[in-house]
Length: 238
Image 1 (cartoon, rainbow, N blue to C red):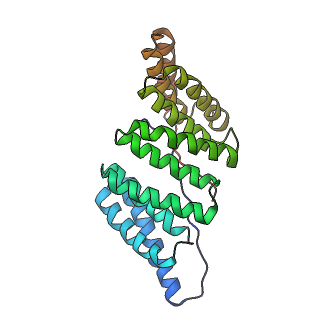
Image 2: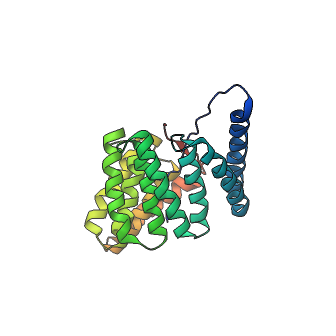
Image 3: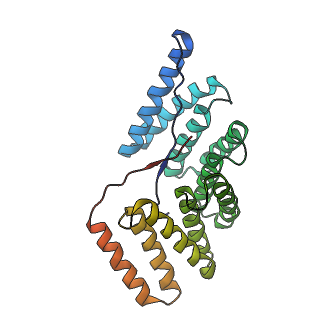
């Protein structure tokens, strides 16, 4: 799957005065942070171990606590990287269900999690299953955050990729264009995410026989990447 803007979930720290709840929180936070650090280093087995422990602790907080779906999400991402798609799917689906109950069905966090499930299906080769999820995710994100939010850009970019894989080139092109406009406006014309999406778009243009346009786009990609700007994730609001 092409590289897109990475979103990270904010975790909610709850202030408590000592006792078993505080110890429970401390264990969850320690394992959560250790898992994130291991995943960043590419040590997936270690990340899996820490995230599984974090999930075990999060289960104790109950299904009204946002640390539970966040822990499900993090472990699902590791399973996805390990190509354990069925296990990842189960966790993403449960996270979506919990977020719907906690935050409501039209909250942007639900759109975010549905997009993650759709991208899992793309990685697993289930393209036709991904399309309706992305359409659903897009509708929620637009309603919750507006038509020019970065989450919307990520979703339309993913949907453009799906349409490209389905050979629906006419439907894919305006989505690439829309994603680029949002990224450039929000992040700047030289952001690495812009380069990544331009590269995807160039691939589409080649499939459509527009080789000169694709070549010009690829030159711009090289220019952006030559600047070696940092890859910073975007923290979505809770």
